[in-house]
Amino acid sequence: MCQPTSDPSVDALYVGTDADGLSRADDRLSVRRATTAGDALATLDADTSVDCVVSEASLPEMGALAFFEAVRDLYEDIPFVLVVGPDPDALVGDALDAGVTDCVRVAGATGPDLLAHRVRATVERHRTESRLRAERAQYRQLFADAPVMYVVFRSVDDEPVIEDCNDRFLDRLGYERDDLLDRSVWDIYADESMDRAVDGFDSGRRGTFGQQERTLVAVDGERVDTLFRASPRLDAAGDVIGTIGLYVDITAQKRRERTLERLHDATRNLLRAGTHTQVADIVTDAVRDVLGYPMNLVRLVDGDELHPVAITDEAERRLGERPVYRVGEGTAGRAFDEGETLVYDDVRAVEDGYDRTNARASMFVPIGDHGVLSVGDTEVGTFDRLDRHLAEVFAANAATALTLLDRTRDLERQNERLEEFASVVSHDLRTPLTVVEGSLELARERYDDEDLDRAARSLDRAFDLIEELLALARTADAADRRPVDVSAVAEACWRTADTDGAALVVESDPTVRADEARLRRLLENLFRNCVEHGSTNNRRESAGDSVEHGSTDTPPPPEADDDVTVTVGSLPDGFYVEDDGPGLPDDGDVFEAGYTTGSEGTGLGLAIVERIAREHGWSVDAVEADGGGARFEFRD
Image (cartoon, rainbow, N blue to C red):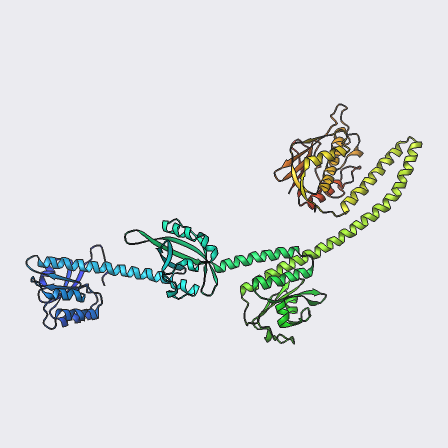
């Protein structure tokens, strides 16, 4: 049929003897002539471009209604206009009852004009209806083929009753159409979706719904997670009669999210594990519960052998006692040796002498340099790419946890040896030095000698050095962390410290979570460093008195200010301690054990400060203060 244009023409087939009047009445009509019904049917059969059939009531071969039925056999919906005489005739009623599109009485001079007008109107109406039917068919097809679940609701007693839905909605939930039509959609909502259902339906009718998650329950009980969007449904008068809903299936996405959450939980548990066996147990439980494969086990390497360390109950029941593999031998041994995951659709096809009667699909995943994760199933070809990826993630996390355990144990052993060494050395040193101290005091009582005074100062420094070495060597933690008022601890430390005339200023009242005893040691070391540094460099008594911050050999004038001020204040995420001395040295790491710029310092005080900060999880930075002194900033 012709497509509509801005001024479409009409191709009419006139059947009868008086076609000239119609042709002259409207030049937009293209009129073909057929004098008999047979000629007209032949024309229609050969030419599909006819827009309308116009037939006189009296035809020589057959009656008008018989001709109409013959036309309908060729074209179901072509417009058919019947031309009747001026007198009323029962034929008109019969024709309209039979389905004739229109009947026009032609009489007088205006008859042809009326007929032309009615023909054009009939064709235009038919074209409009055809276009609407095509559009409705397209929309219906889109509705049926939409890649989302599409539902049409009508409002019944303020409930969304399903009036129509597409096949995807039915297929995904497993219902038959008759099971859902005329039923409230709330009947298939999960309980947790009902708390927002009523408000959601109301907002959908108002056009303010937006987008929310809804969980549907399939016919088999499966929970289908969806992202739901609703919009108002209007009738021909523009009144809201319900809603139109779109459900996007996000079940797989939500399942992945839950899997990742459980994977993160398992990873946290791995990092908290205290033994290799605990790590292996966590892995087998996670593969069972997260991946959904209850038949799995972990082997850890011991020398050149892989020994089963953890096995699920299902694997033990189905497979029995599992063998020990040598590295490079068998499926698990080759996976470990090659450092590559091996996946078998049917492991029974592997001929290596091992009994695998109750296993089919199998996967062997190296756990770094520590062992192998073995996963099995009773079905052939079970494992997909996601299964392999998640199994490799579990194995990689387990390898990290095992490596951390090994390193932690190595560090613990090193610390134990260091503490033991420091204790022995300090004891062996302290005993002869105590004897020397006693003898030196007797000598100083008898003799007034500068050499003996210098020896006493050196002996004091030796004792200080022993104490600092012990403090640095002994491992301590900050397990007893609680909110501590830094200013109160600072003032207490200052009262017991040798401040040598220096002043303490607390600019704010910082509070940190800390082990108070360890925080006290940190502040004592900082105060001693600040006071010694400030007094030494301000007084410049001698080059030998300078400590960790720096020194100079030139004494100041007698009138120079010898006092040093130490300030404690808060930071947005911690606290600071600073002095108004000459500042930090130009080179070197002040926190390095043994680092000092003078002969009297031990070089360990700030190393201990850094050690205590690390115990608390703090960062510590040594920077220049605004006034030029040294500033130490601690941040959580």
